[in-house]
Length: 75
Image (cartoon, rainbow, N blue to C red; front, side):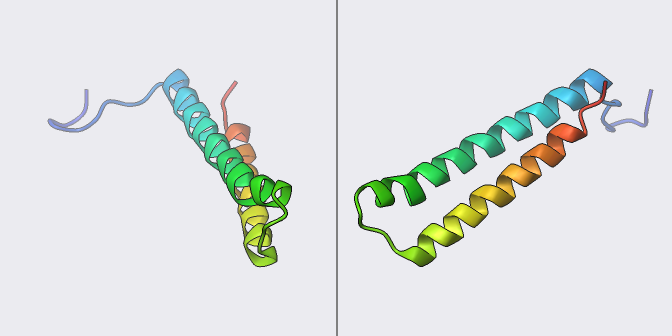
């Protein structure tokens, strides 16, 4: 038991669930960004190359972070 007012130790299962929740959130945000800022303007043939490039880069970076987070899930 820790000091008064301190948080209890998080279990391995709790840490894994937190990591999976973060990864799921990152995935949802990155896919929404890809669809709204890249795919929709491309399909309408009304896009700004700079915005498309920036959004696609943000998508790839967030997917990389997502895979890093999932790689830290404990067995």
